[in-house]
Picture 1 (cartoon, one colour):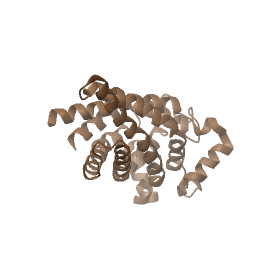
Picture 2 (cartoon, rainbow, N blue to C red):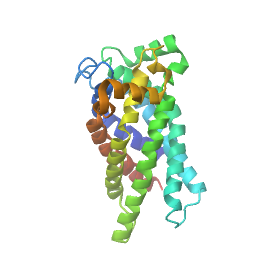
Picture 3 (tube, rainbow, N blue to C red):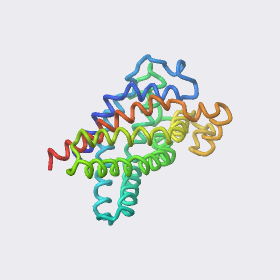
Picture 4 (tube, one colour):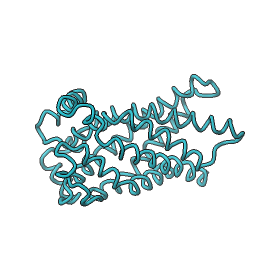
Length: 258
C-alpha cells in the first residue's frame, strides 16, 4: 500500500503539466479553446487527493492476485499471471481513479473554474453517477494498457536479471518501466481519446452515454487517424517518464520497507 501510494503521488504530481497538454489536445473544443498552455496545473487538487489511494489499490490487488495465481518458473504461465493480476488491479483502482479523473479533466479544460466548483457542479447536475461517467471506457483503456505494460515490464526485468546474473536494481526496473509504458501508451492512445471525449461530453449528449465504439467511430469520421492519436506524443512522454518514476519508486520504496 505504501510503496504503491508513494509511487503514484510522485509520478502524478511531477508529470501533471504533460497530462494537461494531452487532455487539451484531445478535448472536443481543441487545444487553444481548452486553455492552451494557461493554467497548466488546473485540476491538480483532484489528482493529489486521488493519487495515493488509487495507486495503492492497484498494487495491493496486483501483488495479491499475483501471489495466489500459479506462476513459478513456467515461462508460458508467468505473462498470463501478470496480465490477470494487472487487469484486476485496474478494475479495482478505477473505482477511485475515475471520479478523480472526471473532476481533473473537466478542470483542465476549464482553467478558470476551481476543482471544488467543478466537483459540486457535477454532483448537483449529474449526481454520483456523473463522477463515474467514463468508468467503462477507463477500464477498457486501462486493461489493454496493463496487458501490454506489465508483462513487458516483468519480461524486461527478467531478461536484464538473467543477462547480469542478479536481480535488477530499482533504477534498472525504472528503465524497463519506461520502455514498457511508452510502448503501451502508443498502442492504447485511441482508447484514451475516446475516454477523454466521454468524460468531457455535455450531460445528456450521445457521447455522455459512454459507448466507446460510438466515440471511436465519431472521432474517426470527423478527424480521421490524427484524431484517434491526438495527444500521442505528450501521452507517450508522460507515461514513459511516469513508468520510470512510478515503477522505479515502487521497487525502491518496497525494498526499503521490506
